[in-house]
Image 1 (spheres, one colour):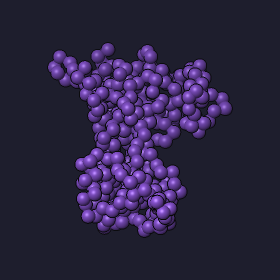
Image 2: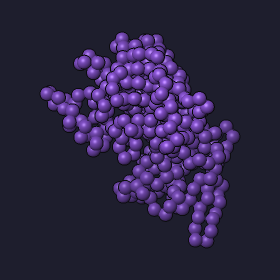
Image 3: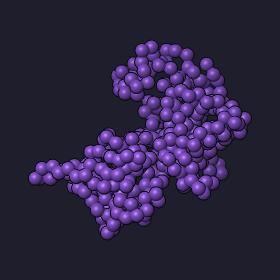
Image 4: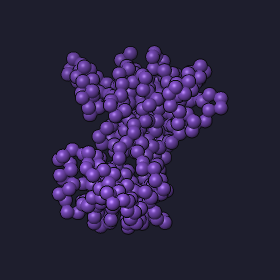
Length: 357
C-alpha cells in the first residue's frame, strides 16, 4: 500500500495538470491514470485550439507531453484502474485490484447487484493507496451511435466536438447526428466553415430549446433528415460516405450519401458511476462542486462563502478533501483548456486545504 498527500484519479488535461501543480507544490502526488490514459484527446489527431501551439499538436502527443511534465516534477504514475473507493474517513482509500476471476471487461459491464458484490470483494482486500486528499479527473465519454465504421474513423472524419474540429471542414460536406442543444451547437459551429450541414435526427421534431432550433432551421446552409439514423460510416483512410436509413409512412429508405465529416452529438456520459454512493451528482451524473454551472453548484458556492465573501475551495465536492475537475464536472464547455484550468484549480485547492489542516 502506498500513502500520499494527494491522489489523482484519472488522466487527460485535468489530471495531468493537477499532477504538475501538485508535484511542484512538493506534495508528491500519486496519479492513477485509468485503463484509458490520456482521455478523449487520445482520439484526436490534430489539436489547434490549445494555446501555445500555433501549428497545432497531435492529441496523443500533447497528452504524453503533459504526462512527462507531471512525472518530471515528481508525480508517480500508476497505470491502473481505480475499482473501489472509500471516502468515509481520512485517509481516503483507493483500490485498483479485481477479485480473482473478474476481468476489466466484466467489471465495466457489471450492474447492481453484481457490481455491488464485486466491489464488496475488492474492499475485503487492502487498498492500493491511502490519501489525505483526492482529486477526481475521470472525465466524460461521448455517447456513440454504435454503428460500423464510427470508431474506425474517429479522428479521421468522425468527431464528437464541432467546436474543436469545425475549422478542419472548410467547404466540406458535413453531417450532425442528434436533436438536442448539443447537436444545434455543433451545427452552428459548422456552418461558419462547412459548405453544407445536414442534421440527421431519428424523430420528426428536435428536442433542443426553441431558440436553438430557430437559429438552425432558419439557416439556408442547413438541411434536416427527419426520422433518420446513420447506419454505417464508410471510407478508406478517412470518411467518404455514410449510410442513412429514413423511416416514413410508406416504409424505409436507405441512402448512400457522400460525406467529409460526421459529428456525433447525442450527449456525453460523465465517468462518475464509481462515486455514486459517496459523492453528490447532478441529474446528468456530473459531480457537483462549488464551480458547477448548475443550481446545485451555485447553492454549494453560496454556502461556502468565507469571511471575505470568497468561495472557499471552489473545486471541492460534498466531502471535505475530495476535489473534482474537468469533464466529470463540466456540463457545459468540455474543452481541453477548461479541463486543464480546473485541474490547476483543484491542485491548488488541495494544497491549501492541506495547509489549513
